[in-house]
Image 1 (tube, rainbow, N blue to C red):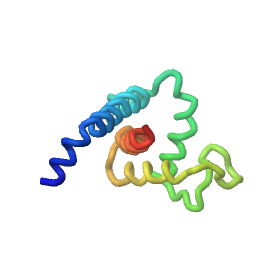
Image 2 (cartoon, rainbow, N blue to C red):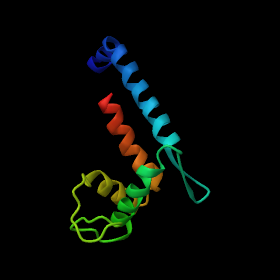
Image 3 (cartoon, one colour):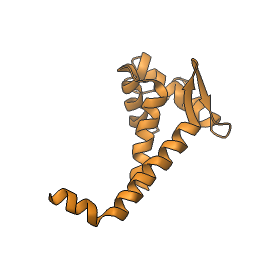
Length: 113
């Protein structure tokens, strides 16, 4: 009963949270999706995904510990790789790459909003 009363009091917060989730979902899936066996990437975002997808796939298909860039041999990674490691582990667990990346991105962006 308390939870229901709390929801009634916080209708505005609930509307803002649901709006953030919907906006984030639309934004992420319009930027990166997977259709008919090929990745669909927005024209303005292909340069970012060109380096991030190999990093994700290095965690999915390879043994990337200690983490290294798949495109640049030698130097250790100096980039926050944990997000992409989680995406790679979700993909390795059976989730498609677009859902793995977009779900974590939606959660992160919604909580940021």
